[in-house]
Image 1 (cartoon, rainbow over the protein chains, first blue to last red):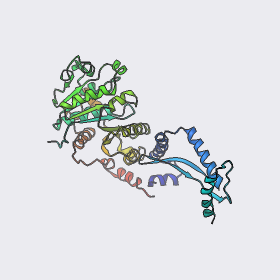
Image 2: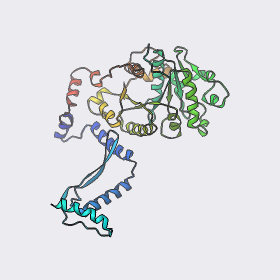
Image 3: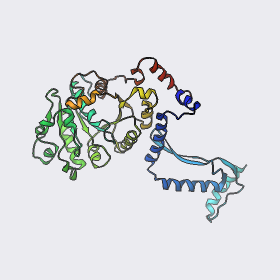
Image 4: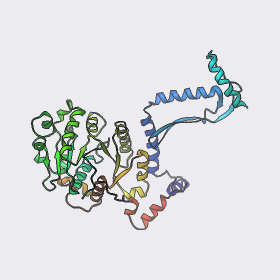
Length: 112
Length: 274
């Protein structure tokens, strides 16, 4: 934040338009570069939240999955505040014993 | 004498968005390079909306075009239009817009290959957009200069083009920031130079200040670098040419262009506090 931005904020003015331009560009370029359409991104966001919430209770209101970009590298950034961990993982439709075998020790570790 | 790299170079001048200054840069850079002793060819690859001939003042001297060269109806040297005041510069005019129906990237490679045999540097004036015209032109270049203005639409389109150039393995890709208005930048009502270079992640080859003389010079068909003008844009184009030749020329600082109390206050207001 520059001194001008700070003064604008103090006076309740709009930020200088260059700051707005930069923020808008960064957002739109993150999407352009990833080549993901908004629908797919929304679907991915829902699925990520679904998977994570199987293991921990997350704050869906505060949670955010978005694309960020820096130096022409686009990253998927998930910011998911955890309310509390769930006592046991719920594997609803996964009869595969191997996966269970791998997953279980992780859970004991994280609960400890 | 210029510092030349070994072999001939082909440089694409592109922007994505139209109207940001590709053709003006090609014309001025072409003349400036020629004046430094480089044998320079400028190729108008914008077959749909050609204008390079007009900016160079050569529109009345075109006999043959790239089209006749490709179809074998004339030799390359017959189609090339030499600049009378700057004999180191030659223009290969764009052909008929109907060429777009059959022109392929290989055709552009053929033309540029021919030009490189007799010139030190070939500047390719790319059409706007990222469709076939761009692909044809980009296929014939080894290096690229991306030109943009500090506006969101131009920067966004430049980013698309840079992505495409990267996947083609074109390098170096360098940036020219055009139509910079120091006063608006100082008031933070225009994207800062650092903002644009950070976002596009390209090295800056040059900064061109907004300059009315550019319009005057295009009216006359005499590029600023030709008539020895000392206007801000002319200086910028000359500096870009020197950097293209490998010379280390410092960039201007738009904040220092303006003097006086207001300018000082503007700089103070730009201080990053956190």
